Image (tube, rainbow, N blue to C red; front, side, top):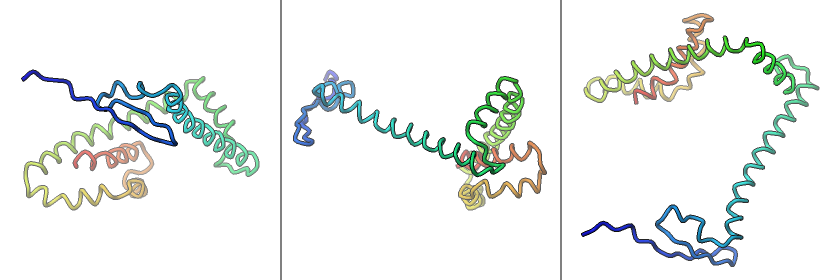
Length: 178
């Protein structure tokens, strides 16, 4: 029996008193059978959420700017100052060193988590006794918010890049094991 393309069906959709006939079963025809007015409606429905997002972000930036100007908190500078200083750091090249150090810590933590997580995950999948012994602890640590462990990590490692590596490791290790 020769293979045939999937059967296409016709469907009638009724919304707000408008009846639209569409072909079902073919992803390439979505929206093609709609009258021009309804195709524009599909586009407008995509634009409205984008406008809402832009409006919300703009309102948040405006509130941030006003709060920074009038409250005078040292930890809340105005948005315009943040943008200006970020541009200065980028132009001077100073931020590249900090970015590189953070990316190295990210890479070290994630690489360590992948190696350890895959090995432990394979062992847990292969041997029931290993799974029974460790499953409770793995699931408990998976459910633990990793930010709650940061003070403990500072106590263990002190103030160093090792804390960043440990946070990345803990954030990814348990997910990889599971």
